[in-house]
Amino acid sequence: MAEIHVDVRGETCPVPLVEMRKAVKKAQPGDVIAITGDNAASKKEIPMAAEALSLAVLGIEDNDKTWTIKIQR
Image (cartoon, rainbow, N blue to C red):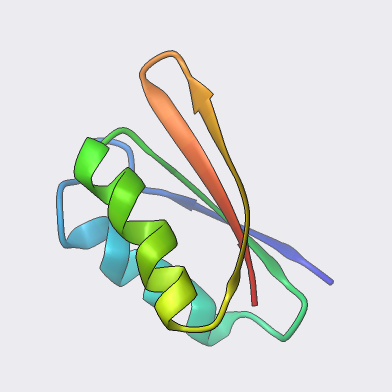
């Protein structure tokens, strides 16, 4: 099981969502994808997109101005 890090700080929609989908395609079942960003809309959209793709949202961490969302393939 691997952890894939995706850094989308400074990016606005739809870039974070596109990058999340690219990472999901590369990931193996069981891999964890950690997406770090700072766009408020993406923080809401990424978990919704993950659930729509039947992926588990493991958690959302808020750090000052950034957030990290962990999803599992």
